[in-house]
Length: 414
Image 1 (cartoon, rainbow, N blue to C red):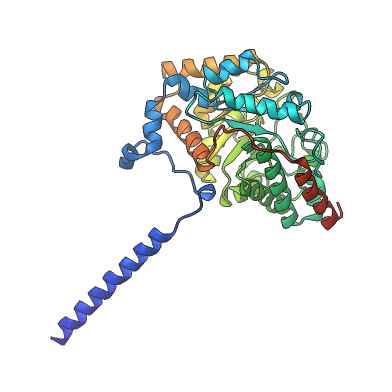
Image 2: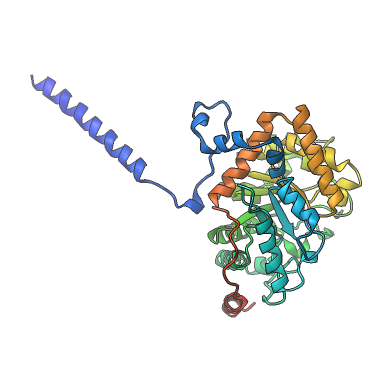
């Protein structure tokens, strides 16, 4: 009798413990801006109940393909060609460059008209910029300039990096942006590097990892999507990829012990998006630059480093691509290698060529429906995670940002 009572008591205790654990699990929820986007799995039985999959199922092929492309603008205005790409081609986002910024009011007007052009579409735009600080800045003169990553790296202070990320994020959010192609996670190991230089936090992997991750977190804290770059590492190149295709003869041991470390740390700390560089690594993939190398994107980045976020190419109109490959076919190969978004910053004809090539590839099965939906799913999930919308900016106060920058300069003697 005593044994029977003892066993019943044990069973009751186990049931109560299980209920307590379930309650703890159910009570745990992250704030929306920190939620990890769901992972696309076409074979999972729960996908039939996934609202994102339902949404993808309602999209036309052209709408899906459009989400895979981010384009640039040729001048200061939202012209007819840009409006067509938004309303008819359904491009997923746009990037503003220095050539698109005359002054604060013009920049605000341009961003607002881009949002208005997208008002008939159900999916909001990625509105992006390269705002690294230092010499790579797109902000109008109303805002104080921030120090370069090299200057920040010399102080090697994680809190400073986080505050820099916060200020940039605050600035961009105020203007209506939602994505920033920063921070640079390249290690400036080659003093003859013509493209990185003071854009890097330093020459050591640990410094770049620490400061880069903190800057990324600072951007994210202001609900700005941080796109870390340039995977798998542009720091040891001697050719500017804007002009030609750099070659780096490193093997996997070297990459794992050096170039990949900052990216691995960023992934561990919640990186949402990574930009792929135009670099040829003959010892890794002798036939394809990293931009459309399945080995580098699908095997190394996704499988080995376990990154399931957004993969975005560097600008496909750079000389590394246009001087060596057909831009449309390169875009198709990049998607099939594992990229999610093709960035095309210049030349409306080239932008149209990329959209047309991707659409044709999706129609004839070169890009399979499963591969297309996988990228569209990641894109929609990230837009949903950051609660993107096309609402107008309410107010812009550069003086508020400048006070924060000046205080930072005073605190750190910059």
